[in-house]
Amino acid sequence: MIRRLRKKFIRITVFAAALVLILLSLIVNIANFISVDASLTQMLKMIHENEGTIPPLPRYGKPEETANGPFSPETPYSTRYFVLRYSGQNELWQADLDNIAAITSDDTDKYLKIAVRHGKGFGYTSGYKYYVSYNGENRWMAIFLDSHREMQSVTMIALLSLVATAICIFLVYIIVVLFSRRAIDPAVKSTQLQKQFITDASHELKTPITVINTSLKVLEMEIGRQKWIDKARLQTEKLKDLVNSLVTLSRMDEEESPLRFHNFNISDSIRETAESFQEFASSHGHELKLSITPELHYYGDEYAVRQLASILLDNAVKYAVSDTPIFFALEKERKYIALRTVNNCKAVDTAELNKLFNRFYRSDEARAKNDGFGIGLSIARSIAEGHKGSVYAQCKDECSIEFTAKLKLV
Image (cartoon, rainbow, N blue to C red; front, top):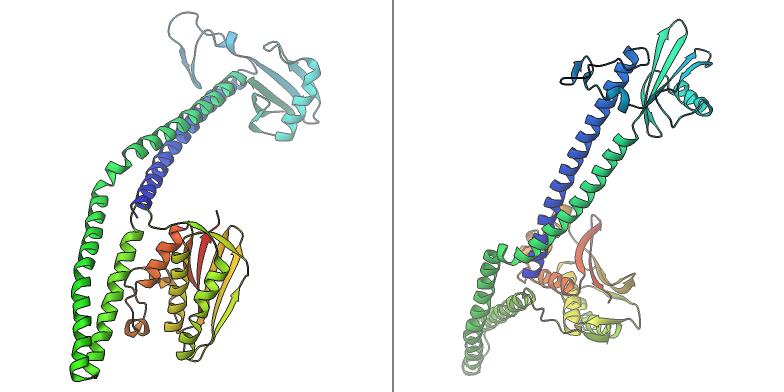
């Protein structure tokens, strides 16, 4: 559990930091593009207002504040643009190419088609921002402003911010990994104290349970069999099972897994375990139908996998509706080995299906009255997760429930 808690803490922290950094990068780049776009728009408007030219500006002093923004005396010399004037019939009657060297008269037809197709307004094409306007009397004017440098600057800032964001996310990941143990240390200490308490309490309880059980046997030998002795012995066995289950859960929560992995024939192991439940199921009025894929081999803890199958079968037998069959299957699904039980049951709230795997949880009155402690499915989940898998429940319809445990193949 500590390992899962640490991984979850790392994922959440890195995700939050990455989200903030990505949003910050997006805001900076969007703001930069808006600023550059506004500057280009101001320049196009100024050229348009001056009939396709940049007016002379004072050679000395501060940049002049015009109606469209500040421009310096160097603006006419550093700005590259060309102007196309054409009629409503899309006939070019003047091309002003004096302020640009990259465009020749052979290129004017291409940009004229772009302007005609776009119509009024601003647009971008091939490193140029343009502005198309109708000047009246069947005359149109299209101004194309060279924006290669500005767009290269925007692209460069975007790439640098992307790289910087990736580096920062990686550094955050490294820092979080290095300090995650210290961050979750209070939770780890609390968990360790709880596990230590369970372990100590279990060991302390085993002795009086054994003494009580032995005393009951001796008492039965002296006074004969009585129902009160049988009830006391039954409760003693239940308490013993509870102690063993708590110890198992405590061991499964340890950072060093108690599972011992080796290759084994899982088909034979599960078939043997399932067949041992057929008499138990029959005594409760259920026919146990098996569907086990033969000759499946698995690398895992054979004892734990057998225990997982036993928990699923025991759960199905206990909570199945009387005189209904129980289906149990073992099959291979892509990268997993799947164990599955299906049985009829009383209506279950689908919103509570995940809660069935919580410790000591019983969903309804029938479960509350049934023998058991509501801890078996918690052990099943720990075993499945110990094999890099999962276990879940789903209702196929209103009167049946399916439990599936998936164990990942190595």
